[in-house]
Length: 211
Length: 191
Image (tube, rainbow over all chains, first blue to last red; front, side):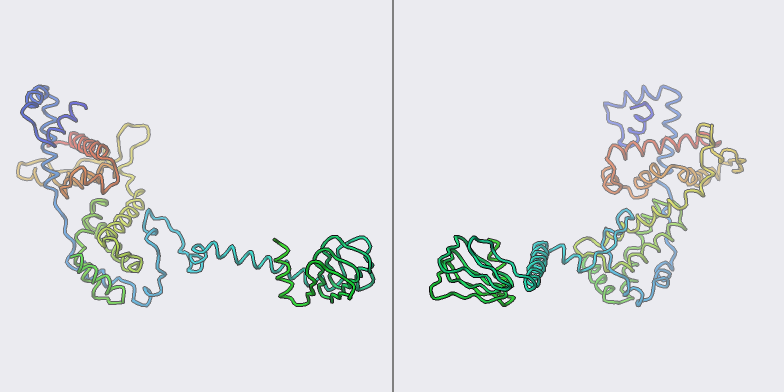
């Protein structure tokens, strides 16, 4: 602290008895003594600063310059953040706020819409050409896959866009999509024999395939 | 006072124009005092106070009654006053330092036409000189100094209001007084 700052400090806080000797020594310096007097005077002047008063008609002038009620009602509510440091952030719409509050729901909706569009796409394409699980010994015609008598298919067999006729043995599930599944009296399917020609069945089937 | 304020604010929110006049009556002196400390000019402070009330009125729906209305209103006032202070800056070129000189401003080149002191008028003269001198202080020294002397606030309270550490507030008040002394030393009639 410079000697001048010390003088200000004494003026601010007053002088303790043990400091009076130090102050006396400082004030022996002619320049510091003058400074002390000046600070004393400045302090007194500052304390005596006039407190200005508002004009008497202030309130009525404020009321006269308010925007009319109609305008005010149209003003969008703005968050308190606006008044802070003059920074302006546009208010979030109610929809945005709702979306931000429910992320899990948004994820679920997205998942189902993408899944169902993919699934439905496959459903529609499956009506055009016949596709089937390749297995040794099966006979394929235009719109029919036949597992002849005496032939054993060691896996699941699926036919899309055609009929499936089982005369031999399928060791697994036999499924016909967009077609009919026939089981001959001598034929055997160890799993399920299924015929899918409804879109809901197709969706359910697609989901089962996932797991 | 708190409950009266809450009731008035609710009434203004439902469109009661007259309740706002009551709010202005309650808070105008505080709002004006804050604007005055920042702008240090009666007329400008009054304009700023008016603008602050208009802003509060148009944004009354954003006021959250969880907080004190006074705090919300005073913050608006500070923002309005500081905006005005920034806008007027260029007009103060008279106080700008002349390039290549140290601490010499255009103000120093004006003829000193203050009347020669005659003991009777000295006191009043110096008081208005004090006003002129305070105007010349940079904002960062003037505002803490005025808060201290006009509101009798403690260093701690000023520190909270201005968001500065107590030590900084103290340094600025000391530095402000020192600058005032320098300004007066260059004038006749101040010993």
